[in-house]
Length: 321
Image (cartoon, rainbow, N blue to C red; front, side, top):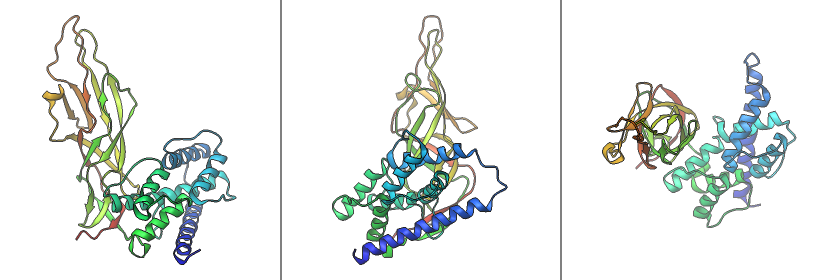
C-alpha cells in the first residue's frame, strides 16, 4: 500500500467512525421523540440508499440488502443489527458530520468540479465517469473508497472547505423538465424528473446548489380531453429541491420560462397562488360531439421557482477567479 492509498483509507475510516458516533449520539440524545415505527423507518432509509447506489429499490429481506450495500460501499460487512446498520449507512451517505461531508455531497462537488454540473444515475456509473476522467480508467476498489480517492486526487489537501450559509426566501431558481407532461399520457401521482438549470451561489463564492441537481415534481391531478369539449387538464406541484449537502429547500412554482410560447404549444399555463402549475388549452371550444383538447408541456421546458422560507445549508467555498 502506498502513502496516498494509506491516507485515503485512513480518511475513509475516520469518516465512518465519525458518522457512526454521530448516528449513535443522535439516537441516544432524543429518547422522548416519537419516531416512525422501526420497520417503516428502516424501509424508507433502505429504499433511498438503494436508489442512490443502484438506481432502483431492490427486492428481498432488509438484512442481506444492507449487507450488499456495505460490501459495495466499503468492501466489508459489519456486525451491526439491521436498524443500526441502516442508520450508519444513511448518515454516511446523506448526512455526514461537521468534520466529514456526506458521500452524496462529496460526489456532487466532485462532479461539479470536474464536469461543471452534478449528474444522475447509478453510483458505480457516476464514479466510473469520474475515474475515467481523472485517472484514465475505472478503479475496482469499493465505491466509497473510490470517492475518497478522487477527493484526494482532485482537491488540494483532500479537504472540501464547508461553510454554513442561508438560502433566503424569495431566491429564484430555474429548473428544466426531464420528460414531457401530457394530459393524454401522464397519470395522476406520477413523479416528473427535473434538473436545476444553473448554479446557486450564496455570499458570492459559496456553492449552495449545483447545476444539474435532480429533483421531482408530482402530477397531483391529470384529466384527459374528452367529448363534448371537456378539455384536458394537468396540475403539477414542486415542494422542495435539495441543496448540495442534501438539505431540503422548500420552493413553489411561480411560472414558466421566457421561451414558453402558449400559442405554439396550444395551451395556457400559469402558477396558482399556492404554487401549483396549472395547464389547460387555449381557446376552448364547447359543444356536442367535439372532443376536448389535450395539453402538454414538452421535455426541456423551463419552470421558474422561488424559495419559500429561509434555510441554512452547508455549501462549498469556491475560488471563482
